[in-house]
Amino acid sequence: MEQAAQVEEGTRERGISADFVEALKTGKLQPILRRVCNDDTLSLEVRNGYVDIYYRGGRLLGLHERGGGDWFHTEFDPKYLGKPGEYRIEPPPELPSRRVEERSDADAWVDAFAVCKQAMDIRFCLNAKLEREYQQALERDNNRHVSGDESDYAVIDIEYAQSALAIPGRKTDFRFDMVGIRWPAEPRKRRSHAIPVLMEMKVGDGSLTSEFDSRGKREAGLVKHVEDIEEFLRPELDGSPSLPLAQLRRELVHMLEAKQKLCPMALPKRLQGRRITDVSARPEVIFIIANHNPDSTVLLRELRKLEVSDRAEYKVALASPVGYALYARHVLPLQEFIRRLELTTPAPRVRRAKASVPATR
Image 1 (cartoon, rainbow, N blue to C red):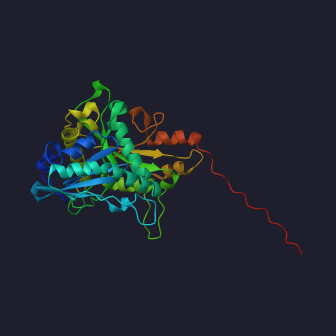
Image 2: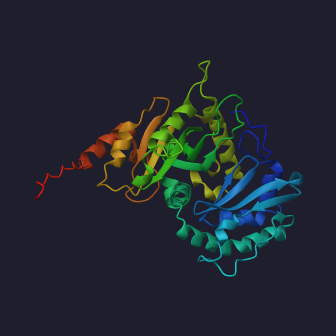
Image 3: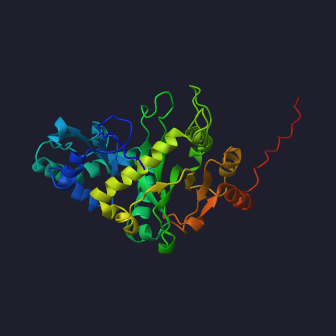
């Protein structure tokens, strides 16, 4: 597959420069990378010319190359430190310099991670972001430890966003909770070929519907996700395959190679030294539904509304029996999952009209 030519921040495809990679591996940013690789509560994700480090689904630190690699700009969201009058760390900690010019600057950020994490814990308790937290848990279960070595999927990126500049004249600002690959854990089935996977995480039955809000915008439920995915997969006007999908296929290879160089221990062992040279043109789409109330009919109702094409294989993941490791035999085709759900979902309750009471004189 062709290599991305651009790696500068804000460009069209994901990737970072060779100087950025070296700064992380052996240069001034090495202390940060070493911490990320040896802390499974952290996740490093490659963006368009920069990297983000996540904790519990929130961005702990952003790293942006500046001055041709002479220094790096850091970003930590001050909202995590809380506001006066609400429960927070007191006094708010003084964070390191936002400029990383020397290795000692990176060391200072590593030392600050503990208090930054604590601040984020408090913020997430007050303002829960469970969907993003579960995304990172799914990434860990499929990329690290024993479950990562045994599952059939690997998560390559969380909070994936395709550049709006990617393809002139074509809508490309697509966003997916997670993207990854299906690459069998069974050794005899492994090849240099992988299947691209789009994953959408939904937490709680309230997240499943796609009603229109007061501004006329559709909520990000299952129906809205499928509409966006179908637009993402739509062939071009000349009948050629979708260009946004083609870009994602390239980016999956680039992001995997970057992670293999930077932090192989954050990948399944079977993928750490494996070169993927071909990513198929027909992806899988997996819905991961967390905390569904089995007494609710909303999941079955929303799944029945989905209008899907054969451009992708739509599936729904089952727990195994509890957890986020994805095994192919427990990732069911959409229609099979609906049939199973029909057997266990209670019938909608019929509200009886109240009997009229004669008026008393």
